[in-house]
Length: 100
Ligand SMILES: CC(C)(COP(=O)(O)OP(=O)(O)OC[C@H]1O[C@@H](n2cnc3c(N)ncnc32)[C@H](O)[C@@H]1OP(=O)(O)O)[C@@H](O)C(=O)NCCC(=O)NCCS
Image 1 (cartoon, rainbow, N blue to C red):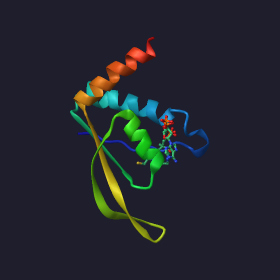
Image 2 (image 1 turned 30 degrees about the vertical axis):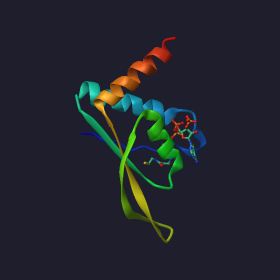
Image 3 (image 1 turned 45 degrees about the vertical axis):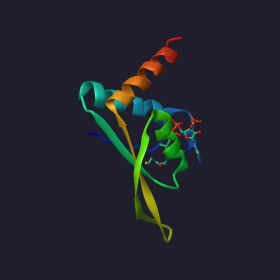
Image 4 (image 1 turned 90 degrees about the horizontal axis):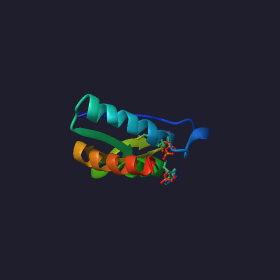
């Protein structure tokens, strides 16, 4: 299993940089290190991060309830994951589109 964390400077968001960087990390994890699973997570109100993970093919696997405290409130942490087989499928579609 492997994981990652990232942040993109505010002025550079929504350009696909996080998605492209994470694809590189996932190729390294799955194809170079031969890992079978990538796990990640994000706080339930982080809509940009949720969208970014789902765009990459991450599947919501569960939630840890009320474990993140921010600005006087508790929030759930959403657990996300993608398997090697799921990534293989997405990669083959992605490379078809990229080389059209
Ligand atoms: C999450 C983060 C890394 C994404 O970086 P990015 O370079 O903007 O990501 P991408 O451009 O590859 O993809 C972002 C996607 O989120 C969507 N998005 C952005 N803001 C959104 C919002 N408020 N609500 C819903 N979707 C949103 C974008 O439209 C895009 O999806 P699309 O390609 O289908 O249009 C960036 O927002 C960030 O650094 N946030 C602060 C740190 C953080 O939250 N890190 C992750 C912790 S789990």
